[in-house]
Amino acid sequence: MKVEIIARETIKPSSPTPNHHRSFKLSLLDQLAASIHTALVLFYRRDEGGCEEVSETSRCLKESLSQTLTHFYPFAGRVKDHVWVDCNDDGVEYLEARVDSPLSDVLGQPELETIEHFVPIPTEVKGPLLLVQANFFLCGGIALGVRISHKLADAATFTTLITGWANIARGFHDAVSLDFSAATLFPPRDDLVPVHPIALDKLDRIIQNCITRRYVFDGSKVAALKSKSTNKSVTQPSRVEAVTALLWSVIAASKSRLASQRSSSLIWAANLRPRLMPPLPEQSFGNLAFPMLLQANEGETDLSCFVCHLKRGIAELRDNFGKTLDEEEKLSLILDHDMKIRDWMHNMDDLIFYIITSWCKFPLHEADFGWGKPIWVSIGNRCLFPNIVTLVDTSDGNGIEAWVTLTEEHMAVFETDQELLTFGSLNPSVLN
Image 1 (cartoon, rainbow, N blue to C red):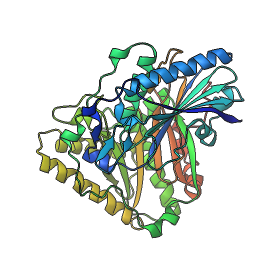
Image 2 (cartoon, rainbow, N blue to C red; image 1 turned 90 degrees about the vertical axis):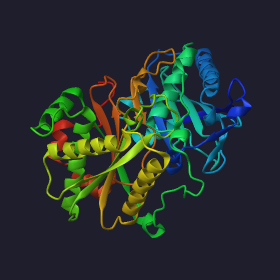
Image 3 (cartoon, rainbow, N blue to C red; image 1 turned 180 degrees about the vertical axis):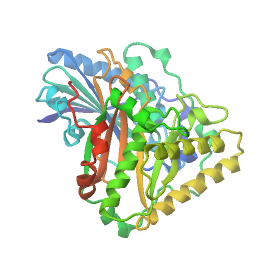
């Protein structure tokens, strides 16, 4: 399969950013976010279209993206330092690509190594904060690859951008409304170290031969998993809690078969917006997800125990943030938590930890640019680090797809687990 870039241009806001919006202040949570880009690909099925139709579709995408940037103006700027974004309207990168294969070649048996070709790659350290690649297949299908700076966006903001852009493409300009109060609620620190340092002598060991597998838990299997995760002390686990519990337990158990471990720990991020007092709108801009640190005890195998750890973490998060806090209390709570994560990363020889992130419940499958809703939404890039899982809704909203990244040795044990194979299917066709 060949993906050929045929056009590259910079898209700027359709209206200049006003002077009073030219400097955008990052929040404390933005400062603590990793300096990486997050990528997604949305796949759309369309009838075969000629060159004129492809040209018109690309023109509409670029025009609506330009209009969208007037609302999401920080994305058209450049990071100035660890506190400010210069909203200078330098613009975002837009690429147009032709794919010499039908969409079914990708969706029949999806491979992340192929999907990565549908997403633009940043070429500058302080370059565009948003990059888009519109890929047009021979059959008329479209893969829209979007890469965004994690410094400015968590999953909720990423989704708000995509759905807002789609609404504008269909002419619904009034549907876009944003809240930019994060830096007021969580003021940045001038003296904050802007990265999570990982000891250099451990990098070679961490960035090792990783392998990523896609497992799909359809709606009926998720319902059965929820039932199995329920007992007297754990009632009504959510879809995400049930699948997260299964993956955490199986990953930990398979790791223990390779090397002895006393316990396993999980970093699991939760959306703060609905859990603050008062709650923030879902359209609040920036990083407003908070990582919970959870720990399972040695020998725990019952799924309900893992669900209990997850629910306890959510309850603790509500206790901490679901009340009125002054600035110093919020600062202390966040920085103490951040320091604990740094300590975990520095003590990797003594502690096994996993990271599970979820894109579930965000309405990415509703992103209709005028040619229908996506038939599939996928992550757009591989992880360089092991022990990372990303969850995405299936197109019907009832199931969950899990992209699991482990070392090759660990994956060889993980993928033979009978409980995993009972509930999850390894990389089934999207077309079924």
